[in-house]
Each structure stands twice: as C-alpha cells, then as structure tokens.
Image (cartoon, rainbow, N blue to C red; front, side, top):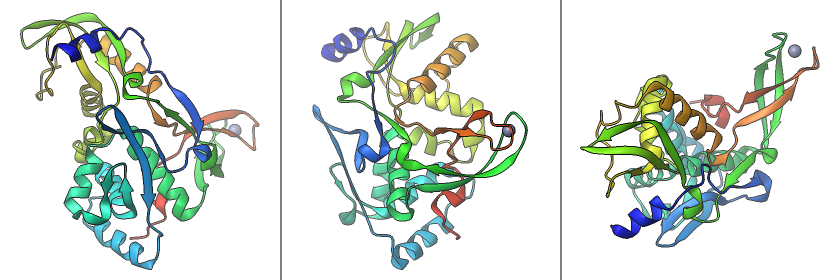
Length: 280
Ligand SMILES: [Zn+2]
C-alpha cells in the first residue's frame, strides 16, 4: 500500500478543511457521506412518520436498553430512513440496516438524526436549561434550522495530522504521530452502556479517529490494549483537538438568561429520550 503511505504521510495540516453550512441550507445532504471510490454519496431519503412508523419504532426501541444511546440512535435511523447514500433501506433487513448505520461516520449519523427530527417534528426543540451564572432554570426553544454543520468537500479534506508529544511503540515500530479523521458510529455503539464512561469513550473515539500511524508502513484496526502507552498529555491534547476538529452538526447553542441577562453555552441533548417525542 505504498500509495496510501505516501498520501497519509503528505498530510501536514492540523485541522480538516471544513466548510460550515447552516442546517437549513443543507437539508437531506450528509456532511461527509459514504465513500464510493473517489466520490462521496450524500443523499438521504426519510419516511413520513405515520402511526405505522410510530408503532414500528416503539416496538424496536422496546428492545433497546435505556442506557444504550448508540443503539437507540441507529435504531431510529434504520426505521425512519428509506435511503442513506447508496444504501436502499427499503430492500434491506433490520440487522443489515443497523450494520450500515454502524459503519457511517459519527458526523453523518448525528446529522441524519437531527434531520429526521426536523422532518418529523419540526425545527423547534423545547429544552430545559439552567443558567451557569445564576442557576435560573428555564424552558428554552432552540431552532434546529440555525444549527451549524461542518462539512467537507472530499474525503481527502477530512484528514489532519497529530504529532505525538511522546512517541510510542506500536507493533514494534516507533510511532511519532497519527493521521486523524472521522470516526465511525460503531466507536460509540460498541461502548454499549459504557457510553458515559469517559475513559472508555476517549479510548474508543481516539482509536476510531486514527486513520494512519506515522512511522509505520501499513495500518490495521487496533486491538484492545494497543494504545495503552499513550501519555495523559497526548490523550488530553488529542481529545481537545478531536472536539475542535469534529465534523457534522455543532450540538452546542448559545442562550441568554432571562433573569441575569448573561449568555452561556448549552448543548442540544440528543441523548434525551424526549428528543424524538417517543413515549414508549
Ligand atoms: Zn442567569
């Protein structure tokens, strides 16, 4: 794989080449897309949400443990989408659809989840928030149309480089850095109910975001403990950069407190069951 090595070794930027678009201006278009050869398949088609879908979704979600958010989201996508990229969901079995979703980028899954929410229930999301300055609790209407989406024009523009502060040994090679890029939904779904364990989350997201090891000639998916040598300082640096460089919808919004008048950042709680208004 000499070509891949040359390609990844040539990446010098430390952030992806992002284009920011308001959600209302990119409806039904995935922020990254599914790579097919050199192109990215970005189209999305959803179902009308009728009583039939409500029942189907309710039934499917009954089988999902409350704590398994990754599975919750992929179940919603697999039932409410008829097409994602080149995948015709209407012609696939339930398990096959879930598998497709797990192989999608996190950015695309979160985008699709928001988009489906808008298609079925509208763009206003009522949230309970608490001011970080004075503690005032209030109900706040967030307009999903204004959510900013970080997109890339090609897969090549999604990659960026991280130089390790402390090089590590992986499979007998001295690794001096990583080429990072989007991680797949499976990095979240595979955590199961450990999705709130920060250590496990960081490990899974960092591994899922590494596309190449600088200092090696090839690349294979990581085994369970292969990055255990990574130093705390690098872990924190990488985590911060992953956050800053993340693609897809920006789930944080600005709110102004009606009591003290100060503004603060809060995040769209896509983990809340009420996000989709499903009462099952
Ligand atoms: Zn306040």
